[in-house]
Length: 312
Image (cartoon, rainbow, N blue to C red; front, side, top):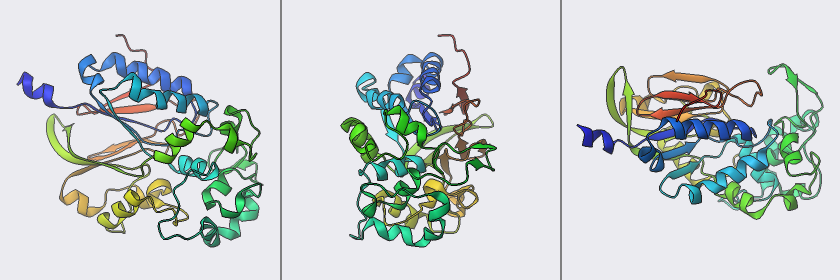
């Protein structure tokens, strides 16, 4: 039995960080203290996306993430792309080109009625920039975000703190030069979906082996799963707004076809901690300063937060 227990790999899914370096560092220390050292050294660590915006230290967060493969060479690290990260990538010109060869300016058309209110970026390099890059660096006209009950931080994405972490003012084209090459490489290489064929999960005291799909917001219920996965693996940037990275109600539930062949679907994005069967939403922080960044450890399903003081 002991041998079998050893074989069950630890999978750790970490929720949205949103520029909060101190929270990330504390959460990582807690994970290291709680998980058996050998298991931690060989764990699969899945970051669920949204590394930038809202919090003050995006640059430090990305420095930390970039350092992990050399600091923990036996771990496997997966860095998912969140909707905020896609927009950041678009602005600093590392988003992959649309596979069909169309210009990024094609992504504007469907949403042009929002351009004035959202104050889309019109500075150097905007002519062929993905819609989300323009929205990200824009200057929103409505200063107050009614749904969050607080002021916007520069743009609809709350991107001003990201610019400031690289020592440039919000909306400045100089950010393209200020972001280090290793950060651009990190952003360029972010994946839109990650799949695992065999992950152990404990539910009601019973261990099950399931497939796992990790994607920032979730999978759409109304579309075929294979079709969605194909688009996500291709990173099809001709799509102006990728539902699997930025959807809400449409990606909340597990598509029916995945309930027939039990599959864990794990996401961040929603500003909530929600666990219902095999649907795991791990974003307790939501980019709010006063809320914790959380992670879930499989197979145990234990939730760990940055705010807990773990004893090693």
